[in-house]
Amino acid sequence: MILRFQSREGQFRLNVEHDTDISSILPDVLEKLPKDVITSSVSISPKPHGAESRPIQALKGVTFGRLGLTHGTQVYLEFKQDTPIANGHSVPANKLNGKDVAPEEDVSSVAIPSTTAPGLVKNPWDSVVQSPLDERLDQQDGKIHRKLDQKMCRHGPKGMCDYCMPLEPYNKDYLAEKKIKHLSYHSYLRKLNQGKNKYQSGSSYMPPLSEPYYRVNPNCPSGHAPFPKGICTKCQPSAITLQAQEYRMVDHVEFASSEIVNTFLNAWRNSGGAQRIGFMYGHYEQYEVVPLGTKAVVEAIYEPPQDDEIDGVTLGDWDNEASIDEIASMCGLQRVGVIFTDLTRPDDPSQNAVCKRHIDSFYLSSLEIIFASRFQAKYSRPSKWSETGQFGSNFVTCVVSGDEEGQIAISAYQASNAATEMVRADIVEASAEPNVMLVQDEDEENDIGRVRYIPEVFYRRINEYGRSVQENAKPSFPVEYLLITLTHGFPVETAPKFVKNAFAIENRDHMGELQEPRDLQKELRAGANRVALDTPRGVLAVSDFHILCYIRGLGVLSKDEETLLCQVATTHDASLGAALMHTPGWLTLAAILEELKDRPVKRGVGDIDVGSVLAKRAKGLDLGGR
Image (tube, rainbow, N blue to C red; front, side):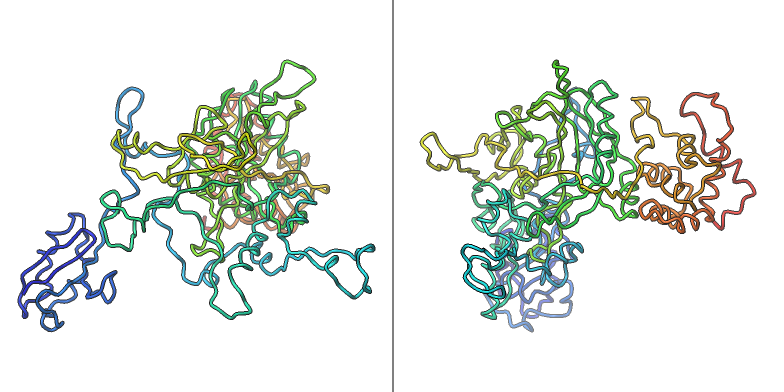
């Protein structure tokens, strides 16, 4: 009898007998399938889309007659491939000297998560773990309470009417009155949830949030070969219509103290005007000014290895990135954003910086928006209200530049969720004009050997007649459609986690600012005859994020001792400091610093060998099994 086999690669027929063992046809089936098919994943099913499928290898001893298959029966095949095909492929890139770029070299400085289609999470409200702040905001009703209107209210103090009843957190009139440009994330969530799920009807719950997806779906249910071998209306992305995003994931950026920014700007001041970039570490709190708002509180700025120039910055290899993130986690912090300078000294001595970013030029360039989008794609926000278990990002981007008055000012931004997905899908690229974003040309991509599918991109604008018209975004469109502005500021009463910010900053060797053990010894002694962590003044001496990172780099303390040190630095508890002083690792560090106390500086700057000092002082010292 003849059986018809159908897979996403097409159809074929095989001649079999009723008493033929099903597992014996596996070599014949593999001949009809691609070469990179995983043999153990090949399965057959009487129904399409893999329903009731069984692996062919597992059907040893089972005949076709036993399954009731007759002449002309349609059988469906499912299989997996060893190397899944992504959304297009590229030819090797070339360097300026004409040599090919090795695959391990052809990577971005910021890794973007996998470009495969995000899977749907079953019951995300039960399985997704949100941040404690999101869980706390979920429990609040977010109502905006109003006082009794003396002119309009005609009821008693315990009554309520339309003029004094609480407003929803997404009320347009209230936001316009308070000059709040964007809804907060949780206000936007309440607005969608109320319109999508009716609790009174008792119907099933649907997650109200869904992230944009502008890539070809590799898991098309139609059964054809993945792109670029096949494509249909079910797997190709729809046309993109850009519009201003009405919500923002973070509403405000707060610097715990002005000294954090001032120390960061010292790099620009002392380097002759070279730009600088740093990553901000902090935590997220509720922002009371905006209904159900979120603010990022910056506690420290870490400056990674970089090559500074007058007109930009090139990031170098950051070898201890994971170590710095771990130290921040021990302090109860996380990476909340990135900050960089764009400052130029003016000719007018009454001004401090040239105003280059304004309404007639740009606020964030196309290249900077792509840079921010890559980090937002890397640091996604977990959400149990999204069908994919994540939605948007809390990562913020701050720019230090000149304002319209010629003073140095900070501006805070985020890229929209649409911008993040367009960068993931490689739809846009930076332009030489900073206020314009380019859309990739599909024909140009095909000419150089890349098979791409780029959907149509549109945006709406007000024309010269005052009418709202839709424009094609190819070849370019304004960057304002991908940009979200945040507010920023400093607290009225400062209470930073790190009291001090006087230790030398990392990776400023070219400016003559080095981190040395002798400087550490000077900071920790804090005017005393010894390193005394059991006193309030001694505890404050280690309350410096840069000191913690430097001590971590010495490799003297164990993991538990580092955790205790971070607790001392952030809580300023002298009792914890006294406990740390009696640990083996801290005793070893104290011995190293004691060795440096009376040693004269005879060698060049930075020539002190910590390892040799440690070997001399630790000889015969009981390190407690370390």
